[in-house]
Image (cartoon, one colour):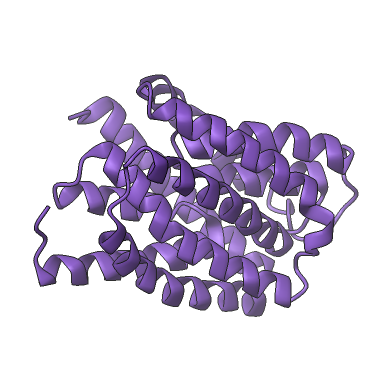
Length: 255
């Protein structure tokens, strides 16, 4: 596939913006995947290449969150393991079948998250007590959301964020940090599976990954500096944009 220098510049900028958004509220894929497909890359190659460039951003953001002590990596080992298992199963599955069913139900699930957070203004402002045991949480959420991220992807960060806030009692800044660690896990595992299936454009992914490094670093610093209120507003905007795009692509203009 021949891509011009101008297209590579566009892809790098898309990676930077996607990394910035993803490191704060998740959902960077709603920016990067459409750009990859718009330049003529097939869906499976776009998904695989997106995982490569997303690894740069999610791993960079995760490192920043761990260093800032928003995440204690020793306490999330179970989450990493179960998310990795779910991601393997999901990525293998998506390369065998299409994702039409998820495309139909995803806007409904994200709308429920959006409305729940919108009408719960105090949710995620402060840490509270977990409502489930951490191991049970990571077992169920890791397998389910890890599978979803490997299988389809858009909205993964939103699901993790709400899960950490609602079930683990985390404030939104802390939930963002934990979300990025789980995202990094499923991104790396999914990338390996896509690569084994021959569905990665390495040069394109590396160019976008360079942009991701910059965007993710800026986004992580914003979360650490600005705190929960900023994350909540940004998160609502990203979920709303994700819902709008999915409804458009699923029901209005599916082609």
